[in-house]
Image (cartoon, rainbow, N blue to C red; front, top):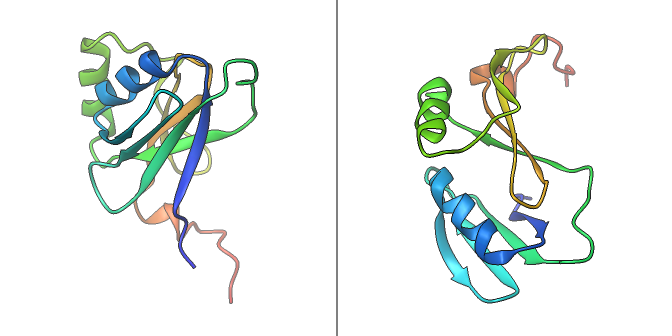
Length: 124
């Protein structure tokens, strides 16, 4: 089994599409009510669904990048605002936190081998 995609609700499709393009994702489907992006590395994708009356949710989407600090600096130079700059977390990930124009929480991170093999990984 493989995770295909995550779909985020957005309140303004044009604003959301522009935001994710600034982050570096490639737009592969573009309709007034749905957009889908390809991630710059790997084979992952994610999508946006226009939900103007109901965008509040507790989901967090994570985007991994080996050069996290440089990526965050590049995004700041393009006007992207962060609520947390890259920080080494107790769970061994380095994370920056921001929100998209619809209020969806995003974490840009680098975890290296700790992403799938943390010291506390369950033994099989």
